[in-house]
Amino acid sequence: MGQGMSCGGAAHDHGLFSAAQFGESEMVMSALRDDPSLVCATTPHDRQSLLHVAAANGQTELVSMLLDRNMNTDLLNRHKQTPLMVAAMHGRTSCVEKLLDAGANVLVFDSLHGRTCLHYAAYYGHSECLKAILSSARTSRVATSWGYARFVNIRDGKGATPLHLAARQRWPECVHALLDSGALVCASTGGDGYPGSTPLHLAARGGSIDCIRELLARGADRLQRDASGRIPHLVALKYKHGACAALLNPAAAEPLVWPSPLKFINELNQEAKALLERAFMEAGKEREKSILKLTGFLLPSPSHSDSSMEDDISESSNAELCCICFEQACNIQVQNCGHQMCAHCTLSLCCHNKPNPTTSSLNPPVCPFCRSTIARLSVVEVRNKDEADNDVGDISPSISRKPRKSRNFSCSEGGSSSSSSSSSLKGLSALGKISGRGPGRIAADTECDDKP
Image 1 (cartoon, one colour):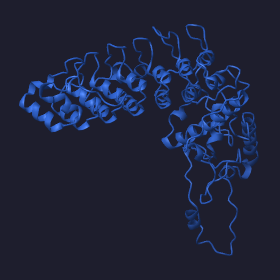
Image 2: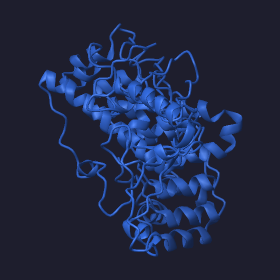
Image 3: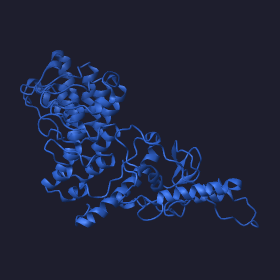
Image 4: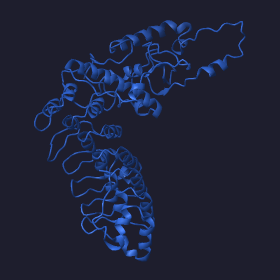
């Protein structure tokens, strides 16, 4: 979908709907001035209004003009679909935003499948439309009347949530956005079609490794059975998706799970979250490679963006080397104590325990250097080489510059050095148990002694 909606009534009164389809705003507005009753006109068969046709074809200017004339934002066509639904269906993000700003109702269900605008955005893979709808729902009357979490997990006539539809249709960006917004990763359908299926079952049926990766990273259960008694692994085998079946095999290494129950993870700013998510994805792909190597399958070739994911230390930066793995630059800082480490080692502290589904939160990890509880993380501010040289530019040449000392050890000077060093070693030891390539690196095939 996305080509736009054609009009069954193109030759109908004044060519009005044809003009709306092609964005001829002046012609439409002139016709409405001459005959205001045309604002209620619809196409003969599908009963599409002018607003439906303009929104489906991405005619944002005309949509804005029609809304300025106080046109009803929730007009229904033959299938009880609103202009917001058809805009989301065709991926018209700007029209979706205009309609939401005008107060369009996101809780209207159509008569075809009992779906809302959120279902349509997820089904057709329009992630920007989906994000706009979710953002509006946070602040609209939905949040107070229905509750935002209930809206994110709203079911259609067959019991499918938007997450089910996005996973089935192989849209990983929509899957990610919905999981970030609180979609239930293990929700099962409850109607006709695929009763009892989880999003992981449907992703296995569709054969999308990217969707499977997103779902496993949020704690999807590889052992959950559908109404036919099948686990996702068997579903992937049935539809001949060998690589997906290998990753879903219960005998394969346990996947890493994003530590979303931790409060400070949910409070990360965008920059810190991006760093940790990138490290998390790298660790997950290492696990996948090790599994698929044993089965003879290969991951798809990396995209151009993936090729630049190595976190090498730039020669022109003033970044410190992580004192846990000695491989990456320090880019994450524990705010309460000021100690620094790389994103990979930060995730090692948080991800080695899989969240227990019977509890809503995890015990927060502790800093490996001082053993204080981690309450907040931030991105390290790295100065470039020129700034660092300017700071020492007025030092006498006779005084030789001392080697830079790691911030992590500067806090351990004096009488507390022995106790802090001892604590640091304990932290390093704990991290080493979950490492696959070196101290503090997240293991590709993490096996933990304290699984739930």
